[in-house]
Amino acid sequence: MQRRYFEPDHVKILDEAVCISEDVVTNYFAISSNYWLRNPYEIKTLKEVSWWEYPGEAFAHLVSYGKKLTQKQSGRDIQKFYRICLHDHNILDQTSGGKKQILFPFLIYVITHEFVHIMRFSCFFCHPEIDDHNEEEQKVHLTTQDILTPVGVRGMDAVLDRFYPHSQVNKN
Image (cartoon, rainbow, N blue to C red; front, side, top):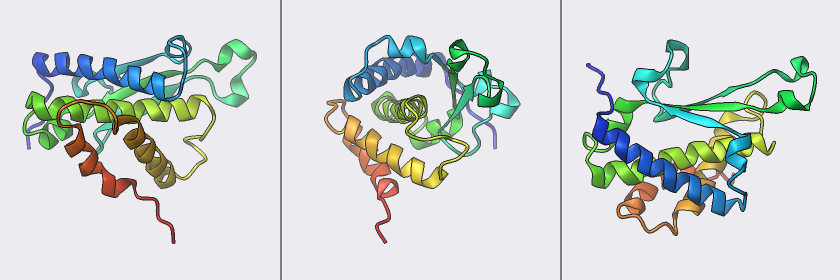
């Protein structure tokens, strides 16, 4: 199977989705816009990621760069840098080849989901190397759904419905 990559039109839609995602996450967590300066991120498409950053079967994968705790010498060492690596062809497969009416709300969901991870890691709500991955994903899905439910973007309800079964917390 040949991999498909984002075309320039898809990247424009991605840029719009990133702006909305950053705004809704900033509002939901009541943080200042300076938060993103202290926790810088970049978003790379599949063409741009290194082989070891390849996100596998997910829609995106978050990579955190920074010094390990045992290597830190001062408070200046605490700053992290986050890279969101997108898996273009998985996203395109889920959005009928990238049709804007489906791609736009889907990308808002994917990027918002990754921003919630950044928030949780940077505020020490979880640690990616210690906490249970499945439990963390459930918490992030629920938070992402809370953030995006009131967002008035056409198609968002269908995107949230698609992810809702995965966000159910097992109460057994």
